[in-house]
Structures are given as C-alpha cells and as structure tokens.
Image (cartoon, rainbow, N blue to C red):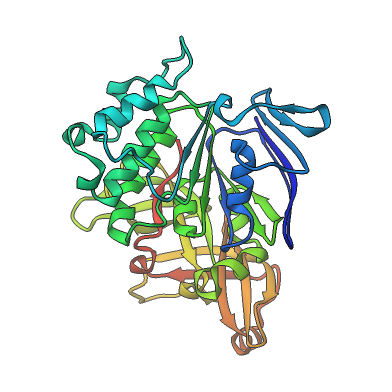
Length: 364
C-alpha cells in the first residue's frame, strides 16, 4: 500500500495530489514538463517540504503534517535515481555499489551485492570509473547502488531522459527485470508514454499540479485527458493478451486479445506469456462487413461502445472487442457515410507492421 497526499506551493505553482495504490509494482507519474512530477517525488523523499503531506508506505508513516510526523530524508530508506547518475567520480563501480551497501540498515540485506551485479550485468564494469562508462551503464550502476541501500521505496526521476534512443532501449530491459524480480514499490517519473506503457502497473496523469486521472494502463490509454499530453498521433488503446503461438521464421507472435487474435513482432516471446500491445488509433481501419482478400492479418470483430468527437473533422470510435477496447480515428465524413453508431457490429483492421515497437511483455 502506498499513500501520498500532498499540497504545496512554489511561487505561482500549486501542487494538490492524492494517490492511494494498493497493488505492488511501478507507479508512473506521467505528464508534461512542469506538471509537478519532480516536486511530488521530492516531497516523498523528504527533500522538499509541503504545507500538508501524508507519505505512508505499507503502514510506515514517513510524513504526516497533521500529526507533526516527519522522518528525516536520510532515515526514510528511499532509493532515489536521478536523470544524471550522480555516481562518485573518484570511485570505481564496485566502490560506488559498496557505498550503497553500507547505507543499508543493520540486519537488512535482502538484496545482495552478487545478485545486483548479475541482474544489472555489472561484472565487466566493476573496476571502471564513471567517466569510462556510457550513459546507460552509469544509470545501471546508479540503480544498483540504490537497490543495495535496501530501500522500502525506489524513486526513479526520469532516469532515461538524458539517454539517446539506443541507450534507452539498452536500459529498459534492466528496469523490467527489477520490476519483476523484487517485491518493491517504485515511483517512476516520465514524460515518455512508451516507457510508462512498458513498465507501469498504475499510472497517475498530472497536469498543472493536479491529478487528471489515475488507474491501470488499459484504462488510462483511452482516457481523453491523455490526448493533451501525448498528442493526437500517439493516442491508442493499450490491450493485454496472452501469446497463443510464436513463429520463429517470421518473428510474429499470435496474441489472444478479447475475442480474437492479433499478430505482433515480439522477440523472446513464449506461448502463455502475458503481453501488452498498443494499437494506435491512426493505424486502425473500420469495416462494417467482414472483409476478404486483404493483406492485413489483424482483424478483430467488435461492437461500437462509444463515438467521441476528436476534433472538428474526426471522431474517435471505441470498439469493444471482448474484455478489451480498441480505438479507431476516422473522419467525420467516414462516420456519416458508414452510418457508425453505438451498438453497431464492426471489424477493426490493423497491419502487423504498424504494431512493431508497441508490444511488450506485461508486468509479472
């Protein structure tokens, strides 16, 4: 259980946030720059003061201003990984890791040095200094150092923001490993929705210091508040499914979603694994009759659940495909020509190549 309630003012900026999450995993704070993400994690860490705050992790109260409780930052047992790794430049990697180990409370060694080295693939780096590491390698060391302090909560404040795309892709699998390996709550700050989609169990949408919406990834992916943050071309439903079969020749995995199957490019997939797939609304075509003779391999039958005006010329059509919802962006003219209406039976079509890069193994 993680409870964070905070109100604070910094000049003209006001923060007023309530987060109560009972499920373990990664809680993502998502929003544009300046929405209050870093201010909020600073309050959780005890680095910033709030007018009113409650920070409670599994019943351990770190701060409650109404009861005049405030644990000092260094005693909160919170691991903090910043955008820049903040490693000690004069120490080699092993010494940086051992520093984190020494900060652990006596008798608290649930996460061992050897395990962290293996999990984050740090063995080849142990005798190197931070200046000799790539950006991705430095962040892996920073993660390891934070873990070895045996934190009750891990704060990741845009840890990939300073990395290029290649280095981000290098580090993301390690973050997935941390999520799946340790039963430790994490707060992950990002303004990259692909990171959030890949990692998070619970998402909090922030804007101008307020919570616009919060919930699971599938719920948030179709929330209208998301459009203003990610932009029109990045809107799309995130659906969960189970891999039915894989084809090592084509690299495609057949994923059962709702009442049908879609094929996605997904490496290292195995039958039975849970998968998250983002289907962008711009890539979905609607048909009012079962289509034939098409190269498109992904076709899900469903029922129109909702039609929402996206702008003056286009609609967002929500299609229930059975325990999942897919979004399609269509022109207003197409909506009228096809006589689209709530309750109507339709078929959603999307190319497998359009989903490349938008399918990930779901949190374990």
